[in-house]
Length: 448
Image (cartoon, rainbow, N blue to C red; front, top):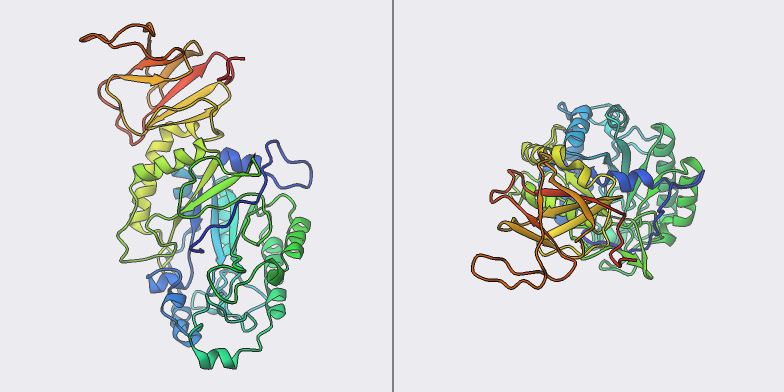
């Protein structure tokens, strides 16, 4: 992954796509997916940019290629874990920045079939996802620190090696561009239907010298090829051209993402511990309740959450990752319908709450549990029934005259139009309790 996020550029499709156009309905319905960063760097176990960070040469990095033998690789288990957590699509790093390919590419020898493992890894992954009814996504790095035609730049591990740079000053990006396009063609013709492509990343004129962008990749032709081969596939915004969705990384947008005042499809990609690849000694794991709040927060603003796991060098999910996914799954098992197929609500949510809505059902996610009463502006007279989602137990509305003063044990009135709900003192035993409100009519906060 890149340590930055690109500027929003994509435009959303609010209705089912016409024939031959990218399909977005499944994406906005799913709301939650799994990212899988896995490759040679998983053996180093100290961040997926280890080759860059430690300025490793190809010869030094070769030790991971020579010992890559993931005997515990079980993509069916990955897919089951994702589905149990409430995720509905999975995205695998088919090739990361180090250039190592997880499939039997005909265009390079730097691939998994030449390691001790000796077998393709992408095909079994695709089949496992399909078997669980999950949408299939592939990540492909536009950067390649191994390819002999990729010009050295500020991201390259040998960026400070003057002798190396001088010896390779004649590298021609056109040779790499043909390779890039050829490999994307392989991925879209070798494994059946692919639903989602995540390219990573363009950086022309950015932080690093010698940055590369859409002209270097010939992004217009790349996107044309993709649309020709699999016109339904969703493509992200990191080729340097507008895509089908935008990709804020490692932060939560403060509100719905827009371009020129128009909403865009977006997906926040987030790590469990700040590292995308397996990082053995990293102890900065986010709690399950924080991750659930991040999911809910994103859906309340019209976005998705793509949550990353970094399997070990042997191919197993990190037990710490598995435990967190299990906790998230216990929440989604009871509260899935408050995020699946939902989006923002036009009603203003009170402090420490997030609203999501689907049709006439409004979901109140309580990030903090109030004492006895919850005041919801603008909803008086609009709710026919209220219940806790975890157990379908009724929540009673309290009718209070807006002009009533607060006296001793009597609560004062709230602003006109406020719905007050009476809550139990003890919160449900779940990270984020949810109240399901059944509206009398579709949302119309203006009252027209």
